[in-house]
Image (tube, rainbow, N blue to C red):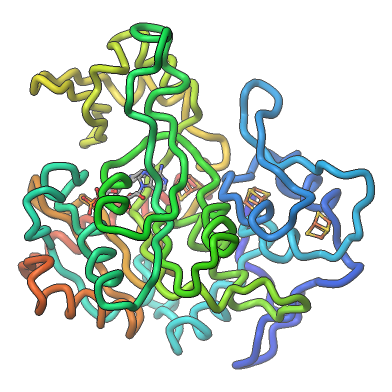
Length: 381
Ligand SMILES: Cc1cc2nc3c(=O)[nH]c(=O)nc-3n(C[C@H](O)[C@H](O)[C@H](O)COP(=O)(O)OP(=O)(O)OC[C@H]3O[C@@H](n4cnc5c(N)ncnc54)[C@H](O)[C@@H]3O)c2cc1C
Ligand code: SF4
Ligand code: SF4
Ligand code: SF4
């Protein structure tokens, strides 16, 4: 199980970079033995994003997992060092990212944050396409317009009907997530909406770098944010260009699902006719374009939960610049935590320039999020 590191084990020096096992110390075999073989890989894609010898593809039983695709491993140790599931020195990463640690003694389960809000986009086209309040897409639009980022790695899906594969059974292709390097408002909007299947989104950062982006925004799940933050805070034996990542938006996440979920959905509704998926309380919801809604008990889709999620302790993307979720905000609004100085600047700037509107969140709302975060930790433990 992913664990918070014993400081002695990874050689953390007070207020300095985390000293990670690097050159010639650990290789892909170690990653395989300690992560994939133990079935705790969260398929974040961090290992594959920073090493060309690794790719993520289908493993046993259709599970996605990293694979070594060359004959010889130089055993440089980077994949092992960057993987969020080998070890996770949270106190040190928090000091590096936020300049402070959370108040562990008080049993804090939300991480470090400066402010929180309930937010809605002020752009009608984003509200229409967004999952909740369209906060993520609007914050990215502001950051792009202001030159804070020159692209954003978002997760889109192929919603076009597949030629010759319409109807039931077309499932595995439709709604399948894929990352996109968005450089325009229209491209950002393609990412809007939640896709409930696992995709190694961190590989999108590599794509953005290869496309020449120098100020990258990234949106991803808590485990993906952990991977990126490990890369950002590790002592770098090689230049991987991580300073180009300028804004990290994390999504709340209780769990994610394997692609088999889409086959299941295709058996109850034509995937071409699905406009949106959502999870509310104990229900997995499927919305059609005609406004129809099908509710399936979460219990019925539990078997599709990705194995790596079962040991995950982070509900609110505790290491992001900004975290966004739906819980504790009313329908059509998003819950937003600004965690870093940059994150708070982006939220406040987007408010001032009319990209978003915000309301204060009731303290009861915060308590609910804390409760869910605690439940997730208990489940993982
Ligand atoms: C798998 C998953 C589980 C979630 N679970 C919860 C939960 O338990 N409780 C809760 O409050 N919120 C949860 N969320 C977050 C919620 O669904 C919304 O993403 C969030 O409220 C932002 O809504 P928005 O309208 O501001 O975003 P939008 O403006 O619609 O933008 C959505 C952003 O999400 C990104 N995205 C979509 N699908 C994925 C994916 N599979 N992987 C990575 N990035 C993706 C896109 O790049 C896009 O930028 C979950 C999200 C995901 C992807
Ligand atoms: S070369 Fe380095 S990063 Fe790539 S698989 Fe080997 S140890 Fe991992
Ligand atoms: S958890 Fe992420 S970095 Fe670790 S092995 Fe899996 S995909 Fe690679
Ligand atoms: S629960 Fe969410 S954040 Fe945790 S491993 Fe699964 S997808 Fe990643």
